[in-house]
Amino acid sequence: MSEKKLIIISLDAFGTEDLNYALTLPNFKKFREEEALVEKVTSVYPSLTYMCHTSIITGQFPKDHGIINNTFIQPDRISPDWYWYAKYIKTPTIFDIAKESGLSVSTILWPVTGKSKAIDYNIAEIFANRKWHSQVAVSLLASSPKYLIQKNSKFRHLRNGIQQPELDEFVTAITVDTIKHEQPDVLAVHLVDLDATRHGFGVKSPEAKAAIDRLDNHLGQIFAAIDDTPSYQNAHIVLLGDHYQMDTTSVIRPNHLFKKAGLIKVNDDNKIIHYDIYAKGADGSTYIYKNKDSNFTMEDLHNVLKPLAQYIDVIYSQEEAIAKGADPNCFALIEAKTGYYFESDIERPIREATNKNVPGVKLLKASHGYDPERENYATMFMAKGPKIEANAVIEKGRLVDEGPTMLAMLDLSFKTPVTGNVLQGLFK
View 1 (tube, rainbow, N blue to C red):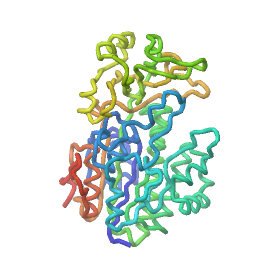
View 2 (cartoon, rainbow, N blue to C red):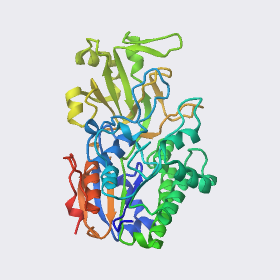
View 3 (cartoon, one colour):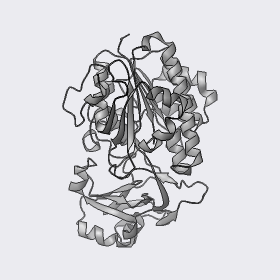
View 4 (cartoon, helix red, strand yellow):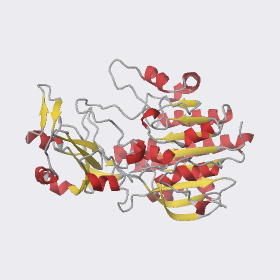
């Protein structure tokens, strides 16, 4: 067991805007008294959870690490598969570096860790996406089976499938138990309740505020376990967000236009069987992909999208998308105007208000995926530990800086160049 310890707690959808309230709560407040803070962290584009969490652990933009969306381009599937497995990441992660350096690693619902060879104790974030799959089976195959069976047996009474807020209670209990028993050198935990609550009720809804209260309670349990475990007395502890959210009033589904223009062909079941051009939603933005045999041009795209002009903020070309760190294989990338988000679906209306509840349909009251440069859309990064300068404050950083910075806490670094830099202002 190494003397070097690092615990990373990801607070999904926690933004800079949340700090004022969170720092009035006992556990956030206590942590703030001992930690260094990066007030405004710029996420990656599109600012979706799987891309963000991979940028956090690689120090790279999506165009380089390969996780360019939450889900794959599968036009024929209503529910596309997610980037669940570590094999999809093209560049080294902090987990790889830690493992190569002889450190033990544990991750609990950290995105894109399925079947990772670098992780000793892994409960992967994954769900059953076929009618003939079971949640237990897909989780066992993607995770560390013995570890998952032990923890699920001990704490499954806390869980309600994958529903929140129970899932975060389950994750917190496993985190506490892992700190006490497995005592990994690197532990990364993903708490998702706030993100799910904001999607369902809005960014600054009373429900979101209650989710931050629950986060504080989870942190209190984790901090108590750290304090009670001698091997973690000199641990570095990190709290970070991956993106913020913005309130939405309507969802826009551009593939309706492409279908109407004959650019998308469907079968009798309205399933896409061919496309010249296809919108792959990323919530606050949408990728546009072009069939390699199509002669479709950017001018054509601007023309066909004219009916949606009032909902579109910017249409980026492939070159502009690459410059922003997004998928180098896209044809274009479209940013939604404030209040709107995109979906790939062609079943439901081209525009639909989100201020209603439709059984079986997920209409988001708030979302993310927007350009991380948007105003009041930053997230944050907090750290404490023996190498960290308590009360140091850096105004700005980038999500890609976090991986190199966390490795530096372990006296490690990436062995090949990465985009991110160590945030030296946090260190003594």
